[in-house]
Image 1 (tube, each protein chain N blue to C red):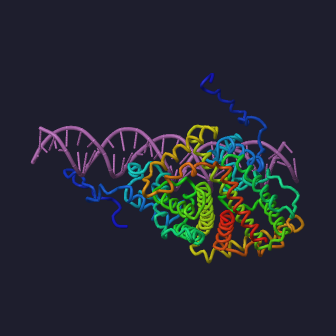
Image 2: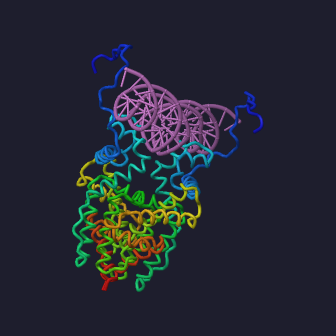
Image 3: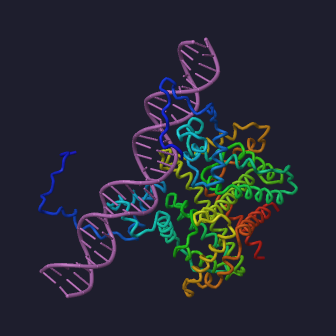
Amino acid sequence: MGSSTEVPPPPWRKARKPAQIRRQLNQDLIVETGLRVLDAEGLDGLSMRRVAQELGTGPASLYAHVANKDELLELIYDQVLGEVRLPEPDPAQWQDQLRAYAAEMHRVLNSHADVARAALAGIPTGPNAVRLAEFVLGLLIEAGMTPRQASLALDRLTLYISADAYEGSLHYVKMRAAGLTDPKDYFPLFVGRVSEYFRSLPRDRFPHITANVDALIADGGEERFTYGLDLLLAGLAAQMS
Amino acid sequence: MGSSTEVPPPPWRKARKPAQIRRQLNQDLIVETGLRVLDAEGLDGLSMRRVAQELGTGPASLYAHVANKDELLELIYDQVLGEVRLPEPDPAQWQDQLRAYAAEMHRVLNSHADVARAALAGIPTGPNAVRLAEFVLGLLIEAGMTPRQASLALDRLTLYISADAYEGSLHYVKMRAAGLTDPKDYFPLFVGRVSEYFRSLPRDRFPHITANVDALIADGGEERFTYGLDLLLAGLAAQMS
DNA sequence: CTCCTTTAGCGAACAGTGTTCGTGTACGAA
DNA sequence: TTCGTACACGAACACTGTTCGCTAAAGGAG
């Protein structure tokens, strides 16, 4: 690529920096860049060095604006939560709104690679996290739940949504590791492996598994998520009556 | 300490190794040692070097018996699942047995530091994992569920138990990071921090959170787990009728 | 306009990590 | 006793998050 040695600058000129592209770093920019790296290369590809490189600097520069990687992850996660759109709360239709909220949050988490891993990695307390908590808590209390019930319901629902998104992100990681980018290519490959393994088990010791392989692999991620969500909602509805 | 320099061995004797403590490594021993390290120092303290050191060797030696760290983690996790005791299945009492199964698995996962993180880190397919799956699947199918329903229920229940144990393990990690070993010391400290944060929020924008701080922090891990489990079971029971 | 204080940026290094390569040694078979 | 081979392992590689000081720029004071 061109000449291999650089011409040294004249010593009387004090080797000015590339340009005035300095004094640019701030926390928002770092978080934004981090989210972009995460979307492009996954959570495993998100390192302080990688983010710094994207900003044309070294990793040490980030620590002036962010305490450590965990804090950066929390900030990125809260930024993602900012994409969750909430309707006007209508306690008369709390079941539908709760279902819609879960679907919306699930959608947002799944739309950002494996950010869901950060969701479970800590107890989120960012501004957007409390915004969502206030919405759910208010909806359920106004619908007639006791504050204690509403708190528990919020806690369990959040755990369920995050956990499911996290589980989905694992497949995302494995798919990426296999060099694929389209879930459509990866899914049958994975299902094939698992069903083959189930079928290879001894029939006498695992009669139910071997006899119901098709049922075990029948449903994909979306159906599984909805099924569990419906279980939780049915349990809540039973408590309300 | 003693003399700081070692007397070199005579060159005509080819420097025999310490003793006949060789040709000892095998997969079971590595898994067993790994589990011991995990229990003693947590999942973050579990490194290939640490396990090798415990066995008096170098990290490279492990790779003859274990493909990589992920495989070692899967093996350790399945070893832990081996501690789960199952009763004779009685489909007439499927609800009680399912609840007892969940409690037992939850207990085992919580009794091994933060092994739950490994539970969610991959789709477990070890011998003990399929043993548990066969039990739950058989119980629910014999109780009258369709194979598809039973598969979905197994999947969601497993996810819920693992996720809750994982969430609990996070507190374990934070407690360890704070230098404490007894949850009794850590819990009020954590609860205090969170409730203080909730109380500091502006009342006009977060009326429900600020008005119900006590309810939000009222229940501990065990109550939360049981509450969510009951929700799932109620949902399943509603489907059966 | 000049000098000085403050502070953000950043190069280099540290102590770790998982994993691989090539060497050599100790065992079981001949 | 000798040989061949499979296993153990020291050393190294390419990473990671994080910290320490030095450099140099920005902003205020005189």
